[in-house]
Image: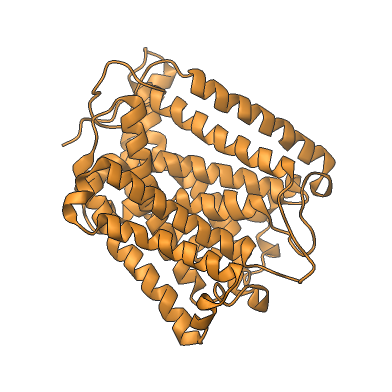
Length: 395
């Protein structure tokens, strides 16, 4: 049994964190420029490509990588695998930060971001047939749900502080949150199921603009399965790095069990992918001499590699092997989603897109902000379980 979650402690602004903070500062300057100068002056977007890096990477890929809380929640609460419970808080923190970054990216990608508040409030203007509306509402809602799910960690810290009104508030609120958390977590399992599948539905609407190797009526299901695999992998990735940089005792047995749960998910994804192509008569395109076929086989190789690495039960207890498999799994899902939204999307033959320098710097800055936020929160609040192995941390 893992130790009770506790704050890692130690200095926050170490040298690596200062570097990421500097990268965020550069990104923040670019964000201010984008808000004052507009999308046309700061991005490579066009009528042919109204969505670019901020949507394809920050939202479509980023939210899938941030589905660790969703994926582990399925195991802990739906399949009653309570032994994975120590992984929940770090996974939810990663999810909360990832979805917050996605929300910021959506805000920046809208032509008039200052009226985004109308989306959840102007109910009478909703287009109830819009998949994009569902994605927007679910992502907004899930971002708040994740922070609420994580709130007991903040309240526990405040409840242990010096006598004050804040301490008394935390002590009174904690029991209420404990009772409400089951319902909040249920909502936290429903919302990703809705919007992750709807991200696939959006590209179903693209029709012939999307290459046949990626267009499919099964895109909603494929996107849902891929987010579960990426969420599991992100938890393994995060736990491995936390063990290394914060000097915690490794959760090898739990990660081995979690990796075993990845195998049917990955196998199911490959069966769906090839079965869909065969059913639609498009499998021959995978063997054509083209960059699209090459991109397809890169996805497949990255998805199949973790199956090979994790198939022997003994190898699931090798931390290095687990880390390699998780990296491959995250890359596989990221490449699949990036291909679907950008590489394989061709609205017209003479229209092309490559992200501008401000787009790249803003994305780099937002990822840096996520890293700084994660380090600061785990050092200040009880998020990570497991007893320290060493007296000093590396980050």
